Length: 430
Image 1: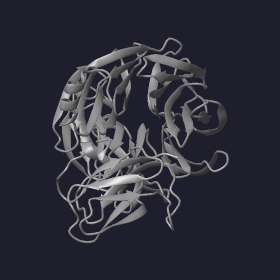
Image 2: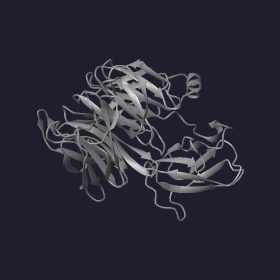
Image 3: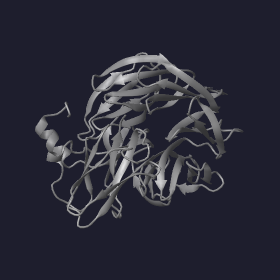
Image 4: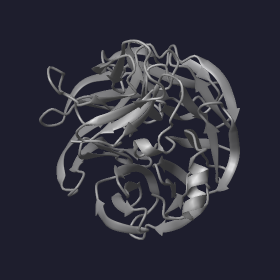
């Protein structure tokens, strides 16, 4: 429940809210957005602080890292009003942020070499601790906190290090030297896949596949070339892909792609996907058939690509779009607030997140026997639930019966005959 606005105002606004892509415009310090269902947009919807550098889209808040102001700006995702500014007094040059779940985010600070744990709702920093030289990207995955320390003290490019901490106690667990100037990472089952930018000279970009079973160890290194900047995980039919925004600052911008499961390069420096100049960040809707969104800094647009990486349209933003994140609109918490009628599709999942049984509500009774499938971020099916004619509610118990073991994480539910319907995102906790 929101605590920032009157209850009646919240209810009326949330009812019309839908999923949005939020975009940080670094040059004119503004926030833009794009509706994911129809492409409607506002390139300059809110004012940000000095040198905004990253954004984390949570259900109840947008947290923007303002590097020049040394703070986190908390914004209501519906009204786009700034709720509070949180000073990071023990950090210098805050760079990137990620959700820790609940009311906490984690923020790296590249010049002070620190990580800060911030309670965005309380407006306070819980703790700050030192992690190494030039920390930038950070992510919380399966109860662990992963920090990429670039090792860069310009003009010296030292060894980049992946560090792992406990996400609750923040105790150091282990670390691994991964390459030159690591900038981003994704999680693919038991692997952490790290994007290394290189030194912009004689060391080019690579993707380092790290096995996390037991300790941290390098499995494979994909020499992808160029000077790639950021990455995300997305799915084309049958392919769990790593998508990479890879710059391109002259006549055209570039996106690289590799198979995140088979570790096979599909598009690299030699055959990139060509888009608008200055590709600096990439986001994915995450499910099979979902779109990709790439911020093109030089052209002040967000380029939309289909799940195969084919560019479709460019949506105008303000000056210098950079960091972006997808905000998934509020969902009903219980069946009394869920839609009571609609097409035959999954319209609600509750409780969400869940740690036992997930209830899946259909918009209309099934007219015939059907199957509801659950699949992961790589498009792999992890559950199949029979739906009998006339049913409007089914349940999923991960791993129940003869079902396969299911890890905690993000999954999607969709009827097998659903065509182009948008899957329902669910979060499984253990």
